[in-house]
Length: 260
Ligand SMILES: Nc1ncnc2c1ncn2[C@@H]1O[C@H](COP(=O)(O)OP(=O)(O)OP(=O)(O)O)[C@@H](O)[C@H]1O
Image (cartoon, rainbow, N blue to C red; front, side, top):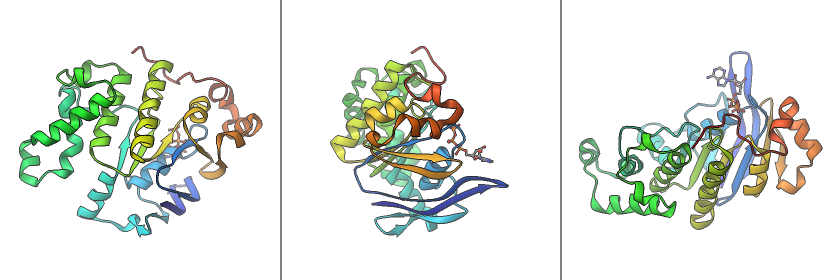
């Protein structure tokens, strides 16, 4: 169980996340929705500790992860893998090596330093790629792949970390609708197959409704909706999205279309 207790983050006068309290049982797939600037990224980054909260705590199975430092913090970051809108791969490296980066924390220091990957790790990485029908691209440079393919490599990299939670921050915002669905399929697949908890920030309400059993809505940093997709009426969605409603509601179109 992941618990957020009164989680708050201020940037100067701006309260990006405002006293959010939330419990997420292991194995849920949760869509975090809300207009641009609502605080979705800051919320996810606080869970992973890329951003520290101003107030409040994050607990995983009752353990306060807000206070972790050093090796324990690194272990926590391995346990809750992050996926970003811009994939964060190393474009000049081949796909397999990019996935193997996800195994770094499982390697003894000297092997990690020399990037001496054991055969077993290579097999794990290849099998993760194969799961998303990407094994044939293992030797290609990551930068030569389409956006949708790169995001699935990033998901494979997250998977080989063996996390219990995946935090995906707008993973499909740069993708065309077909690739957006492939990436959401991949997230759903690892959620169902391995019981990995997935929290995904997602602008498109259509995709959030289609893939997430639970939606959490933020507005001005505060939690304003928490329930199954059926409970989110169109009127409530319009209220949540304000002026962006036409873009977010009733269309799965991405904000920045990219030709894959
Ligand atoms: N590092 C920062 N410094 C100052 N202000 C920040 C910082 N990060 C976020 N903010 C502010 O906090 C608020 C919430 O931002 P956040 O990126 O979390 O929202 P979001 O819902 O993820 O938006 P988007 O969908 O556009 O990414 C915004 O007003 C933003 O300008």
